[in-house]
Image (cartoon, rainbow, N blue to C red):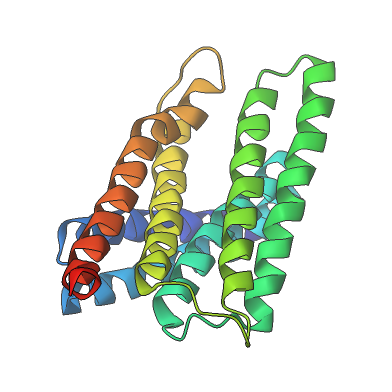
Length: 223
């Protein structure tokens, strides 16, 4: 009964997160609707994480436990970048980034175990492990630049980190829907397909944000 209740909450929260992620994507960034949708999305993803942990433990699934921590960090970090306009890191930011990095290393280790056992989904953990370590390092470098006594990173870099993590969190939500509803061979295809399709959009968004920032500062540079 406990597992059933957790599963219902998990699925309901996932549905809300997917809907509000779409709303946040198509509305004006920084606008009222975008901000409110983002808040509901963050709450939904938190409920997904809170229910995923006991579900993974009850199912004795190290794979799902690692995925749960990985997915939650994306949204948590994205939310922190949106809120922390000072661009100065706090202890919670360092701790979260460190946990993400360790999760990535754990994914690589468990991927090796799965590969040796002949399980196809080792590919999923190997790929997600790379993403986890890369994001942990990228966020850590941003935090390092924001330390007291150093020149703070440019404001648009904070927006880039926010967009990257939130979009990656959206990928994790779409991935969950695909894994549950779509059967493909090999088994890792539905796990990685959303990442392959949406990552170019994240790259484009980051480039667009950087170009917009450059245009805003161009008159000051030339004058």
